Image (cartoon, rainbow, N blue to C red; front, top):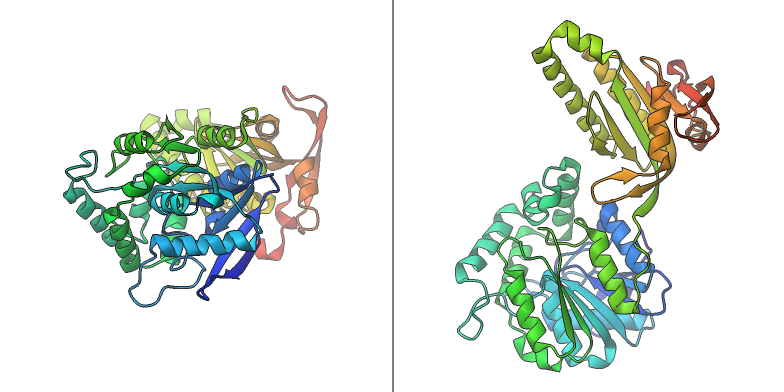
Length: 452
């Protein structure tokens, strides 16, 4: 997480902000009316997205008044576009930026349009995601949403704010990820209350900034997804494109309200090219991770002896064990094909703890496992995890005996000093991997006392 700093506004309020990256141009990201500057870094997808933005800019993030860790608003006050503009100006002054590009999504877009129109000397470019100048329909705005849609949105927020259902509704690509939904619900509760969120969104749904569009003089990029709940984004984006002078519109795939979590590299590529004039060669996010592979030893014999129906039930219970334990140790379960599973972790120690927990739970099902782990750089895509490290982890498991938790020398060296003890299992040729690799088995009698 980038360091959090504070700056005062002219009116004396205190605004929290972060800066990362050292690109030649300043880029401000505003994700919406409800934010939390620090908790957003708990989401690996969001962290990767923000770091990619910072790879070609000096990225500025801030919490507007009334949300996150900036000063609250008094009483029943709402954060007007004028307050948003004052907060942003204070942050730009604090980082020494006379001008900046602004990337604003959804409900923050109206405030960004106003800021660009009224303070054009401070805005070099706009990137707007799923934006609208007016949400509700009118006689002179037939592409807007009907009044009942306004009521449906505010009711959904009032009833679901701070719950996993709210995240599943706005981010359907992660609607079955229990760990993600739990973190999202906590994020909402930490950002603001259901009452404040409902009031703020109702004000956004009633706002109309169409009058400022002719005064937006900076280059503008519109990114929109056509299949969003409660919102015909294509029609709204088309209106913006027709009424902003230097404007380009791009339709994006997917159904998420945010661009962080679904096909992120596609939107990032368009943004980078728009702001810098060139797009870096497409690449998957590469991260240092611990990979864990495990499968049921002698599964063919067990399936034959127990019968098809009983084996299916047992395999289903084992997959539940995998899902529960990987979530418990904050990993990501990538695949459960066949008789085992593949998961990744950002901590080798938690990966080993998870391997032990899975083995223990499998023992209650009278199953013995073969488990292999390795640490290395992986390519993290939208729907897959790839790289040589993944291949090595799978090959380490191939050499494990029933009940073994086998690790590469790389992983053993990474956890040096943890108190864990390993038995050397010799050097092995891993299929498809150059050289011979030292492998080690985790000793059950060599675990730290807190692991007992």
